Image 1 (spheres, rainbow, N blue to C red):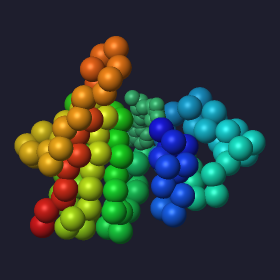
Image 2: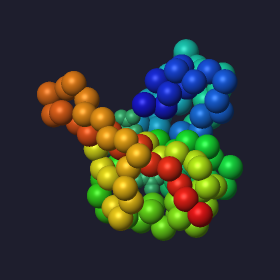
Image 3: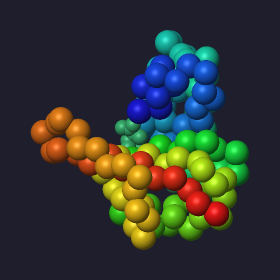
Length: 116
Ligand SMILES: C[S@@+](CC[C@H](N)C(=O)[O-])C[C@H]1O[C@@H](n2cnc3c(N)ncnc32)[C@H](O)[C@@H]1O
C-alpha cells in the first residue's frame, strides 16, 4: 500500500511502518530495486511514530489495533489531519466519507478528519 500511495502522491513524504520481518524485508527489497524517492520505510512498532506533523495517516489493520491507535490519534494528530482506514473503522468517530470498493468483498474505506 505504501508504494501505491508514494506513487500517487509524489510530492508527499510517505513514511511506512511495518513490525513484521517478512513483509518489511519484501518492502525493503522492493525499495532497493525500484524505490520511490518520497518513501521512507521504518521497521518497528508504529506506536513509536510521531504523528504530530502528519497530514494523512493511512491504516490497514484490524479492530483491536484501531482501538489502540484511536488514543494515539486523539493525542497527536493535528486538527484537520485526515485518517483513511481500509476495512476497519475508527470507533466512536463519524467518517466524513465512506466508500465501498468494487471488489469481491465490497471492502469499505473510511475517511476521517481529526478534530481538536
Ligand atoms: C492487514 S496487514 C496490511 C498489509 C500491508 N500494509 C499492505 O499494504 O497490504 C497489517 C500489517 O500491519 C502490521 N502491523 C501490525 N501491528 C503493527 C505495529 N504495531 N507496528 C507496525 N506494523 C504493524 C502487520 O505486521 C501486518 O503486516
